[in-house]
Length: 348
Image (cartoon, rainbow, N blue to C red):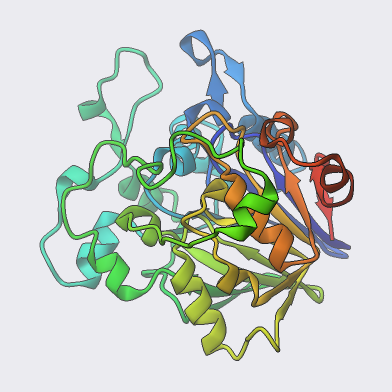
């Protein structure tokens, strides 16, 4: 019995598998799929990535993905899941319930005309199949009778299997900002510092730290939630906006004098300085703060975020790629005591 969290190696993206092992059954939640290479990579996609390996393991055990969550439209979060839907024998057969604020759901929710250009088309398995000949993801979900949640918004609470999920983001107004034609690939790093700040010392950052918030409408639409089971509590923040998270935690009665006790926090937007403030961190009392990225894009994680976590919390900072730690040039005493590389899984 217990909860297992696996932060898969999704390069600069997110791909998280959460498993609850009960006395008689298992419940799996998959959050995002990273970029396409998280599922398959290499010439003609011939090599299996960590997401495909994880799904193979689930198949062999006769289990399912009881809930899949596509947090938002950025490629480094959903493209691996799209590839897993396209490939026969994977998500189209494994997933039971899905959360995804698709363009179609959003336009229906706001009672405005559909925007066909935003629909996700799954390319057929044959290399000769064009995008136009592929299948619409929404049609596939209907075909496989996958349970669709309505628009996911802050304030909602869901009880699924052994889990309670309390949604903290997005707000309705953030979804309303998506009522336009989406770009082919939203640049999730548009608000990230493309040159890193690793030359700065922690003392320099602490002496002159100013928080500027992420203005990206796509990151603002990200699904973020509190996940609870077996007296364990975890925050999965996607790429959500900092203020929305802080406001919704405060609305639930948390403050710097009454912090929310957590076993794990998945830090927003791969450790971007624009998505994690000292204000929000002051509301959290967590054992560990996880950052998912290989450090290959947009100068992430920002060292300023690491400095804020070290200053405002007592928890460990865990990375799913070891090379990121050495790049940050943190003092040796900090590395040994507060910053670590993730094991293959976290058992709670």
